[in-house]
Amino acid sequence: MTKVTILQFPGTNCEYDTQYAFERLGAKTEILWHKADKVPQDTDLLVIAGGFSYGDYLRSGAIARFSPVMRAVEAYAKAGGKVLGICNGFQVLTEARLLPGALKRNEQLHFLSKHHHLKVINNDNDFLKKLNVGDVVNIPIAHHDGNYFIDAVGLKELEENNQILLRYTDAKGNIQNPNGSVESIAGICNKQQNVFGLMPHPERAMETILGSDDGVAMLQGFLKA
Ligand SMILES: NC(=O)CC[C@H](N)C(=O)O
Image (cartoon, rainbow, N blue to C red):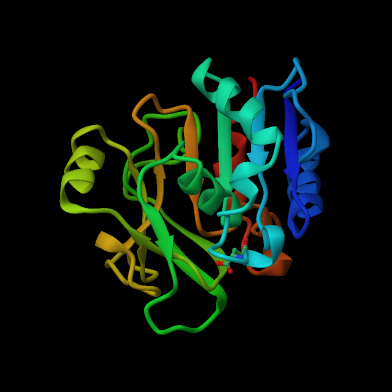
């Protein structure tokens, strides 16, 4: 059985949605408070859940990065452990330099909360292997700091190493840009392809009655066969 450990900082608010989503897919889960100094040994996937860690003070994710548990997360990722950062989790991972780039305030300076389409750019990784390149999924976004920035050198590296995983599009897969992100990037991974981050919330797209179940195929990629 796959074991998913979900990090919780003061201000995290998506840990229970994330727990529900993974348990529904048959995983066992544990919520880990940010004061922990170890990642549980049986962890197959570590998720940094969404929310407003430390009230988004200074910059989203900028304080959480100094929490004790982040030293353990760094060691876990360095040893090849799989890490997924969703929304605020993505922000924490960029602040901790486990993923390149930064998340700035949305271009229009508004909080965005709606469903958005995304196109799969690369599926040659654990995260998106259940989807096909070019697939368009419908996933909620909910952020005010989702404007992904990376400089030209960094962007070239992302492209060369197939690190761009998802881009924002319309329902037909035409590129769209809700928040000003460089090249409409919605999700990336590190060069080693074991640390993943995205602004949209797959854990909120688990049931058609709630607008979409396209998150199922995304999260399933992490489960053991
Ligand atoms: N849903 C979230 O994780 C919110 C992320 C972050 N606090 C922002 O608004 O940008």
